[in-house]
Length: 248
Image 1 (spheres, rainbow, N blue to C red):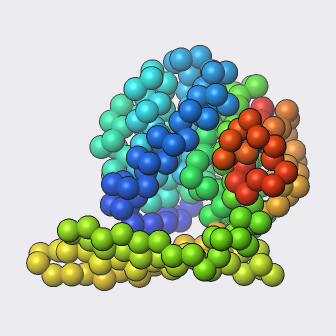
Image 2 (image 1 turned 180 degrees about the vertical axis):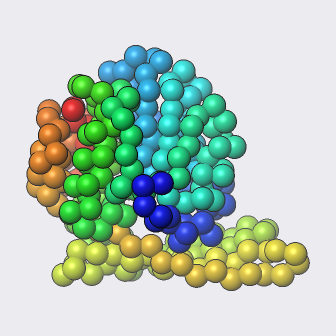
């Protein structure tokens, strides 16, 4: 790793991501990924999956013949990723600081991973790192929750689930003045006939469309397009979550 920064706050939730969120998100988003990214790449193209999580998207990509490298900051998530996508390469690193040569035809980041980058300066660093890793004319696709989503029904929302061996609940709080949100998570996991409690907090940042476009342009990206994640054929004016696609 370039810097000794990992995301241990995600480790306790890794099993839940692997068994629940990861498969669901990759299945839901994949038709849009095919339409917006994959149809513009050769079938053997080299793809970097940034904030790859438990590797479910990498698994789908490798099964289609793509050469996949995944980056994530959670050791436990990468353990699952290597099991789910054994023919892909995975690197423990921080999206803000990773350095890779310009060897990728495409870079993708999904499931609002980049919303966890909480300053525009650090987000610009991420975009610079992606730009450096792409081949000339390479494609970068990512999704982003805008500030207005966090100010809507996301704020003060609750989620949770109960399984035989674990239970979890989370509450999401957003501060519109700081344009920053926190996700408070409590997990109970059955270990050696005892229930173990874990508490963790994730932080997210709500950016505005103009900020994201400006940061992309500042590092050199061109042909910047964005789409309504709910339906890529629909207008983006009122969209809360966007896909971005741009060229190096």
